[in-house]
Length: 342
Image 1: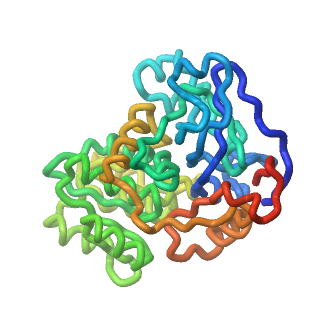
Image 2 (image 1 turned 30 degrees about the vertical axis):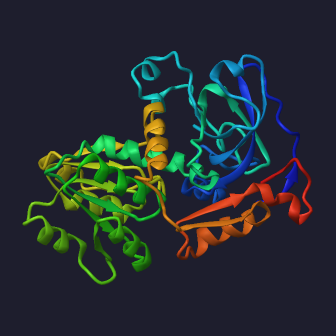
Image 3 (image 1 turned 120 degrees about the vertical axis):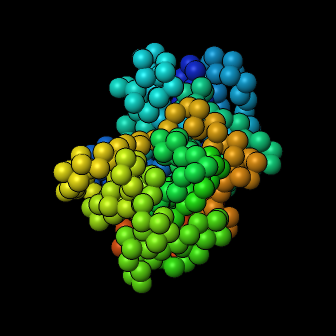
């Protein structure tokens, strides 16, 4: 990862240029940094969880009620709006989808451009810092939607990173009876407990045995893997009740060996969860605005020119940081030019 000069994007008809304030580091980008993500090929400007202010608008963009100086966040999953998937509200499956930080230049730069229809004004009560969390929160909303959890259901969430924590909050808001959080970090588990979860640390407890205790031997009605490792995927299947659901949203490993015979015999329902719909994104912003969902004070803010340090640290030895936001507005304070990007 390195800082470099690139031209400031010029918004075309129907596009908006956003001066970035905060840009989050996503786990999917960490895998891209390591060369393990098929969607991300160097050279590329990462960043798709962001907030900022509108710097310029192309022709026809004002029809969306957007104006220069407006505080905004944006849905970085650009879809066609014409296919059957878009028409039925599952835009994440659009065959023409393009994601900032993958197919398109991302937000780890002072400026990013995006079609106006994907830009969302931030309510006055939502800070730019919290506005940058809308995208990962939307991922959690989609995961909860797939579980269809109700008031009689117990769920397991493996992995208390940002997506796992947002999924935990979303299923509780959806009305789940009980959520069990699993992670190797006592610090993250303490945060999850504060949100209302039962917690299990595999270093000190047998996950399967503890889940059986909490569910009277039945297992959970739905399990969410927010890690994407072979061990956590299998753990979720093992922990599910007969006929239960397992939602895979973590992308850590591309290949995993699962006991398919066990899945067939117990009629476990498997779901993949990629990104979110436009509706999920809007719901996430509404919940953030209402302070129903968030990461509290567990975000770490750093300057854009420290991005290389954080990408390296988060792939080698992540600590207590739950979400790292790069503060792009401070870039000029360290002598960088006004059109740099990482």
